[in-house]
Image (cartoon, rainbow, N blue to C red; front, side, top):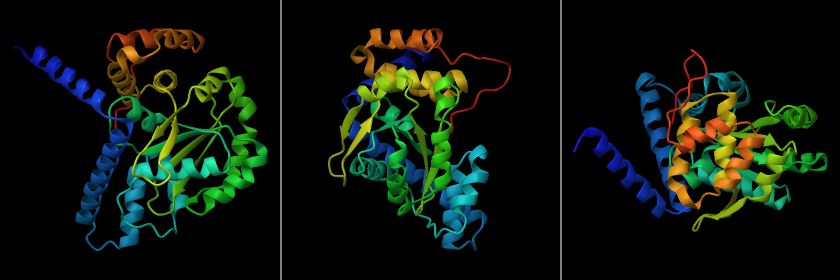
Length: 298
């Protein structure tokens, strides 16, 4: 058997195994991967800076999770917090935020890497992405609810609401803000729904994922089809090998369970038909220019 055949056999075996795992199981495995990554990162920081205090270790670990573009803003918000060098539990954080939003009756949708884990392969993640259908009247309750466990600028939320008309007019503009867990500095990216038709469809097709054995054990997650479409749209905006890999993993794992008519319909609406076609064929990520693509970090 040649190398290509062996590789194909291994991939088929991996996909077959992923199909047997529940969404809850994959999320817990991803949590374990994140914890291990944090332990290794902490070991590296301690080796480089053996005299570092526990607080300094926690701060250094939090900054190491952030991308270069996020680091300056994150560093300012995290400065002064009593961060501890504790491996992060993204699943617990996602469940905590979901429970908070349910209590406040604010419609939400978990998207991004967590949704990709639910529908595709489990992997590490550097943040949690959430879409909110936020009304102006709910801002105060959201601020009060988040304040206990997260650090953020309340003005960023009101600024995001102000930017909603611009986001409705141009899909490339996103009304969003960031919050950071006060214990670990882990980043939460919150996007406000602009009300465009695709986002409305995403909320209508949301799936509730039960996580047995976890406090507040359920999450409202974007469907497999909507996760594929959203990631392809992000890829169109900012090409990333990680986005492309997530898309192909979902397509392979879900396979015949996917609603292909829905995928094709929205791919046309979102002007990503060529990207969807390439992804369905298992093609490598297309190069949009001579500039190097963002590489998959996790």
